[in-house]
Length: 195
Image 1 (cartoon, one colour):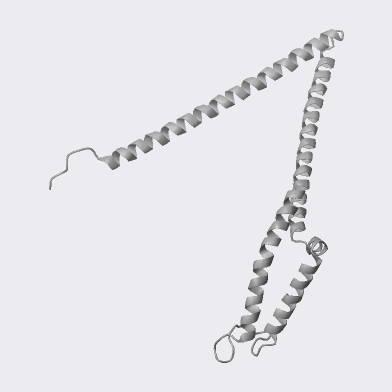
Image 2 (cartoon, one colour):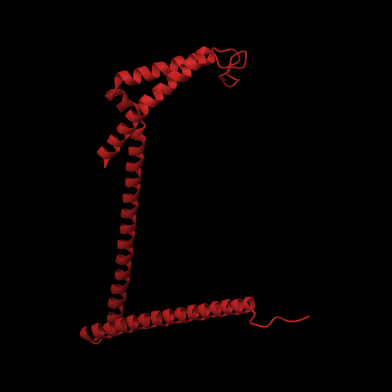
């Protein structure tokens, strides 16, 4: 058995992948350490600032250091309280805006499919459409074998569509082709009016 000379490409690719993962992990750990150190330094700086302020206020109030601690501690707690209150107010306001926009969008979408404006704007077309639909359903339901449990079929007793079925299908197709552009333009108008 002869070994083929040359590099093992699969082995090299695996080693490169391992090295890349190891480098990414070390970089992630280094960034976490830097963030932790920076946070600790900021916390220490804030603590020293409040400590110095407490000592300064205590000295200003006649060498009453305890009163300086009390005032600066209370000021810090009030600062945190108001920051949390402002954050909560902003959060509630964002939720209200989100709920309002969602409700408006839902109302617009429902308004497009609401039949009342269609009937008001096009009374004759919608009445004739309802009448034709009613006649089509009535004719289909009176066919033999097309009851509540059976699905309507388009085949007559001899296995081919009856004249009435063909007539109804042609009428529905013509009606669909006539109403599709009208419905599309009305939907586009309503969408453009609401925007």
